[in-house]
Amino acid sequence: GIYTQHGTDDLRKLFNDNVVVQFPKPAALIRRILETVGDDGCYVLDFFAGSGTTAQAVMELNKADGGNRKFILVQLPELIDENSVASKAGYKKISEITIERAKRVIARIQEEAKSALPGDPQREFADSLGFKVYTLAKSNFPRVEFAPDPAKTEAENIALLEQYIRE
Image 1 (cartoon, one colour):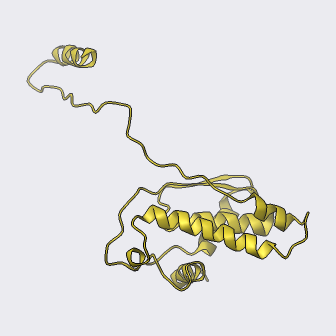
Image 2 (cartoon, one colour; image 1 turned 120 degrees about the horizontal axis):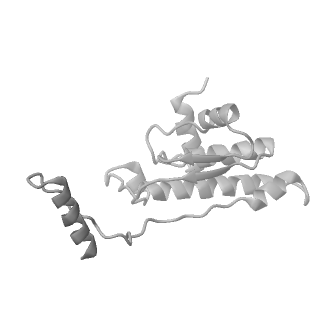
Image 3 (cartoon, one colour; image 1 turned 135 degrees about the horizontal axis):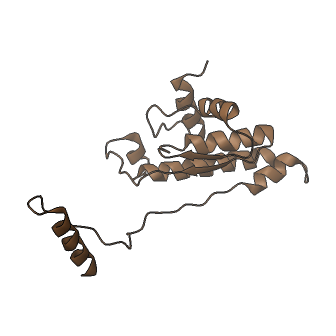
């Protein structure tokens, strides 16, 4: 039995009893899905990263089974409600929570591995953890404002489009 409460518990453990997101997915649910559909070297793509549950699930599953799964999380820089717990904790965007959760999972795994001897696979795994953050940039492509004129023929609209492109 995996319940929504487990997702809240995951966040409480990572964020020192601060629940910065309501109703987060439980990491155990994502791990179960990965065990079922992915192999231990797959790439996991989450277009709605939210609080970063997928990152946590991938890292924990890799730790448990020695896998080498990678994750790609996409989270738009969506602003957080000013009256939320997350805002009061200092977060301005959901993506900041996503990044912070991944950092905290890595720190926890590395802390747990400190007691392992050098050369122990758990210690080597912990030392190899990390991730990169990419941000959206302004597009180099110009906005296209061309719209065909319904009063003109297809040939006339094509000529107008060609003229628009040349300009």
